[in-house]
View 1 (cartoon, one colour):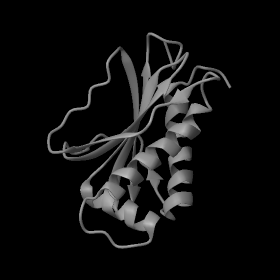
View 2 (tube, rainbow, N blue to C red):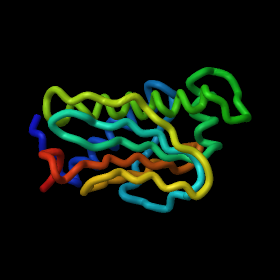
View 3 (cartoon, rainbow, N blue to C red):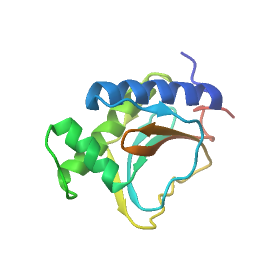
View 4 (cartoon, rainbow, N blue to C red):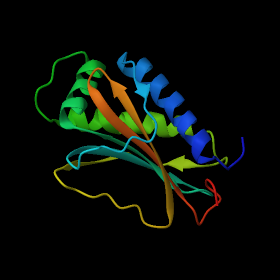
Length: 159
């Protein structure tokens, strides 16, 4: 596949991949809502970076209650408090979604290890000139967001 992914096809691919990953890993149906941007500043954001000829990042943002629900589904046990398991599950979800999206771009790309930011009113900056495609997903645990940031100084995405 080409190293170019338009915003519109980016939304379609993000929606398809996130829906497949959440159904497979969590047995959770999610419905894409387009570029709905009502996310709150508090919660967690898991990210993996794309490295190689092209650069960018995949970001998964949800609130604490959603993170606990995702982890409970994956581990098969009820969780009520934030733990390292919750951070690990969010990181793994970002990693799997990013790994599936990685195949849409230039060959030889690698993913960083996942990282997770959490708290109230945090801001996560991605350095460089980036184009960001965000898709909101509705689920039985609420709306969460997945973003694909593409560095415009590379051949990653639209220029």
